[in-house]
Image 1 (tube, rainbow, N blue to C red):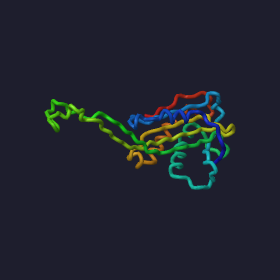
Image 2: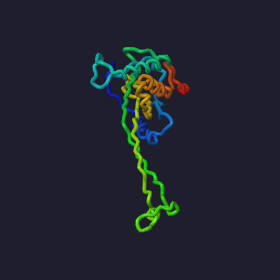
Image 3: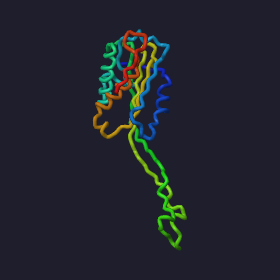
Image 4: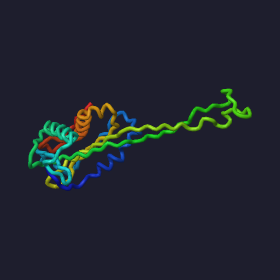
Length: 206
């Protein structure tokens, strides 16, 4: 494990700004990725994971961290990278789960004079605009996962990918599958293989 400071590309801020999923009504996750065009990715052949700030390499890893690292290792090795104690690249994950609230107001049914209902004094309810506004409130969870791929020597991110999606109760029950799918979706935006400078077409997961 390694611990260092790194400079960041503006991708994460863009992801957060663009990730309003229409009140949680999107049909799928919002997945984005970006890389530094000035970097020669052909020089990278090995990888490892970045320790948390101030972390101890021997400290306990959460189940979520283990799942993310296992999924990332499969993706990196399928691209020809080798895990090393002296790596070219460091991978770092940051995730969070937030409860969101969606409040919508819609006009309530308007009961006009044609309905035949009459109020005090014989005036139809509709004459007073009876109906008003109906307000509905919906709460849901949104999960965000961001992955940095860092040039260890230069201490700067060369690729950043992120995913944001509404997290259902079914997804929370299948934690391993949900996290693995998220990591796989982010890697679909990483267009490089070990030792090759030119990007290859990202493999979009269906």
